[in-house]
Each structure stands twice: as C-alpha cells, then as structure tokens.
Length: 87
Image (cartoon, rainbow, N blue to C red; front, side, top):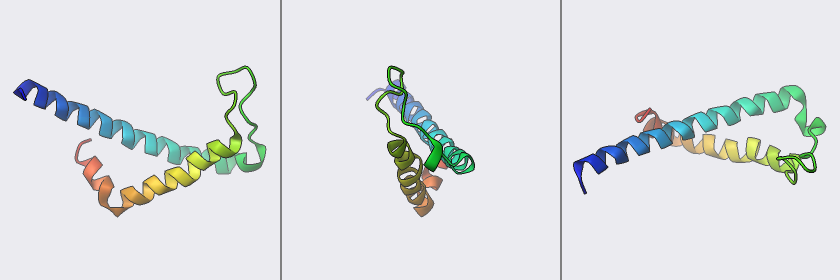
C-alpha cells in the first residue's frame, strides 16, 4: 500500500468518526425535542406523497430512542474515547 493511500485511509477514518460522533449528538438532541414536543402522542406518520411517505412515527421513535440509547451505551463503555481520539 502506498504512503499516500495510507494517509487517505487515516483521513477517511477520521471523517467517518466525526460523522458518527455528530450523528449520535444530533439524535440525542432529537430525543430532547421529542420529549419537549410530546411527539410520542402528537407526531404523525410521514405524509403520503412526500419524501417521508411510509415512515411511521413509531419507527422514528424507535431509532431516536432505542437505537440511539444502545449506541450511547456502547460509546459509554469506552468507545467514545476511541472516537474522540480521531476528532
């Protein structure tokens, strides 16, 4: 492997880690909005004919909470430190 490719690989890993870090933080922020807006009872499913058609409010909530909480738990077990080293 060339030295240039190796440096590109490091750059790609760092950029991906940053995207992951930012995505998790954005999802945690969405948890706060969900709670503040009571989306558990007020969020409608995606509008028919729009770009959100077919997306159910319950599925959105599952990602925003259950999946995000699982990722945060994994990060809290030490993986956040690994990612933070690449930021």
